[in-house]
Image (cartoon, rainbow, N blue to C red; front, side, top):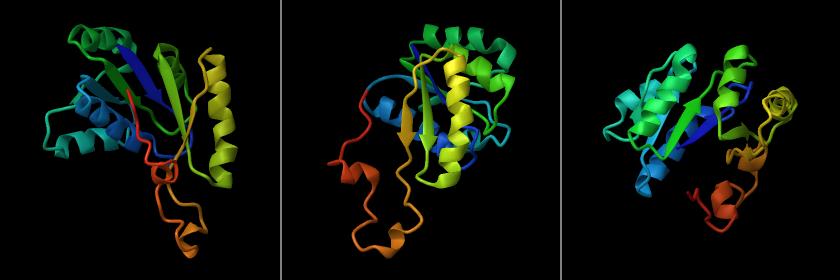
Length: 164
């Protein structure tokens, strides 16, 4: 099983959106996926409760039991476990990074997001993990004023989606 942690100290960067959409796409491709919500806002958990489908499955796990929780999910045949994190630099998030096989850092194309990502990058480097950064497909501040600029990032890249 691959553990994918979605991390950024910046709120509103798209962490929860990725933590919800990527496991759904994995399930659509026949790969069992689970989600774990470690953010106190619990938006991913609320999304999961309101979702009509049974998959992806969700697990509540306190940080001190996270390694055992991940082993349990793997034993149940999961291909992926996606962990949504709180928008902060904390020992909890650093501990989660150490458990990750892959860390995704979503970044919106704005100065404040780019400034905030530096601490997250340092945290990931400290955990000894590779550094993939996801550009969030949202509009930049001026895009809504330019005709033809409202297409999604995926559409501008020739329709490429997430592939597992």
